[in-house]
Length: 272
Image (tube, rainbow, N blue to C red; front, side, top):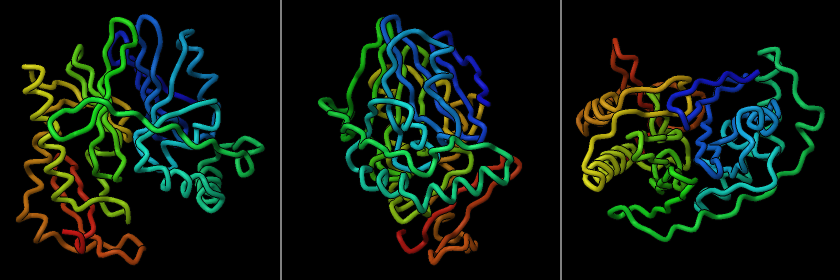
């Protein structure tokens, strides 16, 4: 079962049964779906209950909880830097893990969940620049969407920016609980600096402050002031002094936690 929340007149944030979110951005002529969830339900059929316009799929990065719903669409696009991650995370080993998680939640999977074949996404063709970040702009008809390559959670992570609404869609490059401990994640301090620079460049270019943020593991919008404070809090000193935490993997994982906000940063200490 999907839950949809209208954030702005042209922006709907959707959460699937497994609890991960994706976003439908609808212009006058066509629409973009940013991520596709776990693929436990037919996301394409649901999207077409919300819009009759042509929908193109953009994947924020190559992790399974954002890409397995790609199976329902003929085409998708992502940054080519995450293509190998995509192939690994759509593999049988990962799908079996998702099937087990879904079973624990009582979610019935499509009969072909373990056998369906995935098409490689097409590469996003970046032809513009935002400072040192590659970007591309798509016109949906009275609505411009900036697609920006910002390495962080994965090397090929992308974010979207809608200047009309002062809205930043971060994918997994920022959540109130941000994970930077995966083997493909870049060093935590480099990710933080990239996100700070991104925000600064967007606000300088547009002449206005970002107001709202949508991320992949929150069903509702967050204020942009939160991501700015989060990034400031994750200082080099705190990264250097962060305590170890056991994530059940052979990775030197450390954690910075701030209450009462509930902020968490998990990262690989050996990369900093």
